[in-house]
Amino acid sequence: MQPMRNRQWILERRPNGLTVPDDFSFREEDLQPPTLAEGEILIRNMAFICAPTIRNWMEPPGNSLYPSIPLGSPVRGPCAARVIASADPNFPVGSRVCTFSNWQDYDVISAANVLVRTIPDGHSFIDALGPVGMNALTAYFGLLEVGQPNKGETLLVSGAAGSVGLNVAQIGKINGCRVIGIAGGKDKCDLLLDKAGIDACIDYKSENIAERIAALCPDGIDIFFDNVGGAGLQTAIDNMAKFGRIVLCGQISGYNADEGEEKIGNLMRLIYGGIRMQGFLASMYADRFPQAMKQLAQWIDEGKLYHREDVRMGLENLPTTLNALFDGSNQGTLIVQVSDEANETA
Image (tube, rainbow, N blue to C red; front, side, top):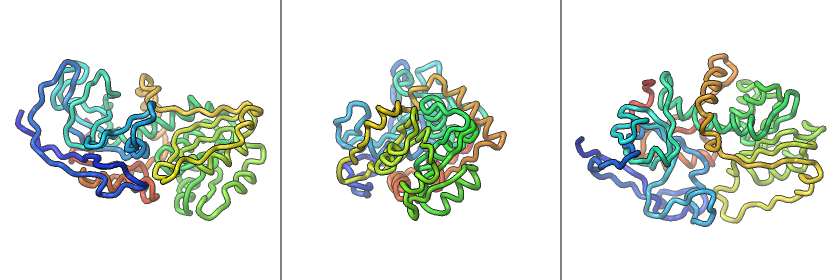
């Protein structure tokens, strides 16, 4: 194998608020073909998904339950890739996989230690990050396993026009819930009402969230799927129905905050109401990914699940693209395509 030209993004300092160009450095150098240890694979990255949690990983070490990217190291993120050399018989050369890699063209990963899943035939690398990708899987398991919806229950979704939230809202409708979304701006609310078919939408940019929740949920919220945190989470706690479930998926309102996270109060309501609040990661259900992907694909084929991807081009644009998650400019699952092969289905 000939030397490979490898581009990568290095985290040079801890961001303060939104990332800026000086938080990173861009390197490009020849990479000699590595000698693989047993169980390792060499991958060529085709596309990356920009996920809000990547911003969490840029924070200093201190939380043992999620990683901190060391300064001077490449930024990490979920990706879709092709195996170009292998010392693992489960992933021969030519295999197409989703995994976690670094923001670079090539990477060596241990298939035994890193979450690696094969992309089914018929799905492109983009599909594997979008319609049946990690965000869709997060919505699927978060709502169905943690939220445990029942027909006729009221489901409230924050960040409802985002990649995870849009899937949650629609899976809620598929399961017979009355669904209310919270989103920012008329266009996003119209999308949720017209494309996702939800029952009501609260525009946090022009409406009072607390007043609207109280009006729309006079009997309380049965399930709150939270992608945002902050004041919205507090308002939901104040309006939960007895035996309600709060699904903690993200805290995007605080990822770029200069100060500490908002403190949540009124927790005695959880005790007296028998209300459960639980966090989760989709990876906790990794052994069931194939089943979930099959179900998601079936719902898409049946026209029950609308999806949209915001695909942007070029590895060189990864850091600036990430910020689109936080300024609201992304129009669907935010994906950065780094290879022309990313749309191939086999």
